[in-house]
Amino acid sequence: ALAVSLRGVTKAYDNGVMALGPFDLAVRKGEFISLLGPSGCGKSTALRLIAGLSAASSGTVRMSRHEGPAQKIGHGIGFVFQEPTLMPWTSVRENVRLPLKLGGVPKAEGRARADAALASVGLADFADAFPRELSGGMKMRVSLARALVTDPDILLMDEPFAALDEITRFRLNNDLLALWRSLGKTVIFVTHSVFESVYLSQRVVVMTARPGRIQADIRIETLEPRG
Ligand code: ADP
Ligand code: ADP
Image 1 (cartoon, rainbow, N blue to C red):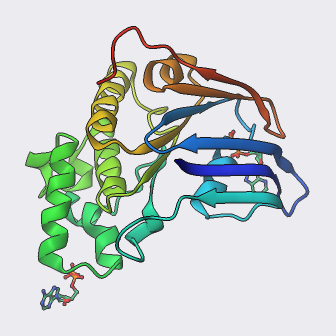
Image 2 (cartoon, rainbow, N blue to C red):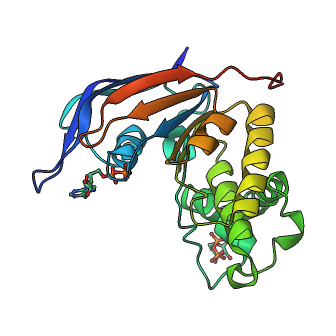
């Protein structure tokens, strides 16, 4: 089954910049794919179209409809940006609970789910901490927990680890892989690191310079079973 499908999608911004396409992409449920390409080629634009944060100029963007509770909080999508954008005045737990709070989930349930999401990213002991007390890598983990707390079907990640030092980044890569294996979510990961794309994903989609089109769509053969 498909999680996402884009057909003949183009995007021109109001200022006339042709950012994307025509672009065709089908992502299967549970797949971990990377979008790899130079700065400005339209990677973020593609993610925003998939997330429904911006409308395509032409073509169609389809998401598999979520099965189960009618309107899932966040429409079944979790988004992680390079900037964690945490609210500084409140605790890590409340930051992670925010999407549930906005979705009307009762406070006690929201807190329990936030704590579970924090545990899944290795931050069980930091729920009561404030963002300023955390390192860059930990803030990114909080951001990941906030994206996962609604139990999205699809996780969209826009160069999430690009600002982190190499060791922190590598640890996050490994933990993200472990999470993906255990949670079975569809992940679309934007990066301009060839290493990261090959290390993390089952499939690397290489984009051309702007307007981004697909130049290559490569299956990554793994040396070890991925679980
Ligand atoms: P990438 O994520 O690959 O770096 P983007 O999708 O952010 O690329 O941007 C693709 C192109 O569209 C760039 O030239 C960028 O400057 C332009 N662009 C992005 N967002 C907007 C916007 N809101 N208005 C006008 N141009 C934009
Ligand atoms: P906050 O984090 O600012 O307290 P909440 O969404 O948790 O925001 O709660 C909004 C309001 O509803 C608050 O005044 C809170 O005290 C109240 N509230 C939250 N959960 C419950 C509940 N289960 N029963 C009664 N009142 C609640």
